[in-house]
Amino acid sequence: MLIFGIETSCDETAAAIVKDGREVISNVVASQIKTHRQFGGVVPEVAAREHLDAINIVIEETFAQAGIQPNEIDAFASTAGPGLVGCLLVGLNAAKTLSLVYNKPYLPVNHLNAHVCANFIDSDLKPPFTCLLVSGGHTQIINVSDYDKQEICASTIDDATGEVYDKVARLLGLPYPGGIQLDKLAQCGNKSAFKLPEAKVGDDEFSFSGLKTAVLRLTQTFKDVEIPINDVCASFQETITSTLIKKTVKMAKKNSSSTIVLAGGVAANSRLREKLFELENEGFKVYAPKMKYCTDNASMVASCAYFNPIKTDNPLEFEVFSRG
Ligand code: KG4
Ligand code: ZN
Image (spheres, rainbow, N blue to C red):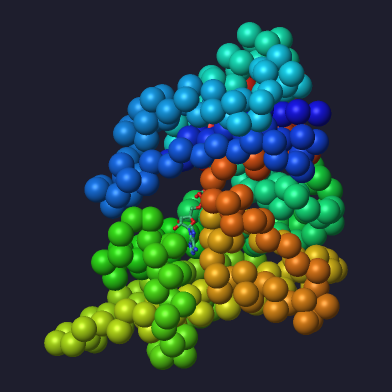
């Protein structure tokens, strides 16, 4: 089954063709990073307009790279939410239009479920497993008991992990998007240079506000000397990844799950991946998406449309949603 997926929930205009949920035939991503860098973050109205400018080109390029004609596609899918409404509308209407023109089903997809499905691409992963989903908007531990059965067992009570990365990066004067920049500097620093607090909240909650404040206080102690930025980044990264992994292991044990999976933009983080793969020594089977399928892309949307589309009686009537 060939599914054409579209992703426009935030600042990436992306399309992809995926066979049977696992095999990527073509994958195109047009990033708006350069546009939003001047504002230090995503400006929703600007992002929506950029999606409009890019969408047709991205769709054409996706078909061209695959050497596939639109009438060979079995279903058209798009992210319906959560995300920026004006942005989501562009992808959803493009996918619905293709579905009407070529008389094939339209499948709406939840962006978070799509991040989880990024792990099915080029892999043999099968449920059940425990998934740590860490993106710019969400931090969740999910018990995935079947392809379409996901139960959130822990989530953040304040900022999402990616958001914390981006805020700390901005505090340190790093350019948008800060997460990847911070990760790069952290790899050159001493992770034990500074002791930062791990959040003390319940097993099923994450909170990073204390850590964020601690980094702010730490930077303020370097009044007359240059901030040892690599060491600050490395210490921050060690603390946050250690919290994430510890809680995930706890939840996996609680769910009697022997497989642990990473998902979301922060799954691209070097130290988080390292710590995940160290869990193999504790007897866990571990999976993380390939780097290009961690941050927003449409292959994960097409994969999710195959394994776990949003259940609705009338998909063409299904509308975008901002929160989920
Ligand atoms: O999943 P994603 O592409 O978009 C959302 O659905 O939110 O995640 C984007 C987030 C941003 O906050 C970005 O800074 C973060 O993922 N990110 C990283 C890394 N690469 C992307 N955070 C830490 N380390 C990275 N290497
Ligand atoms: Zn995302």
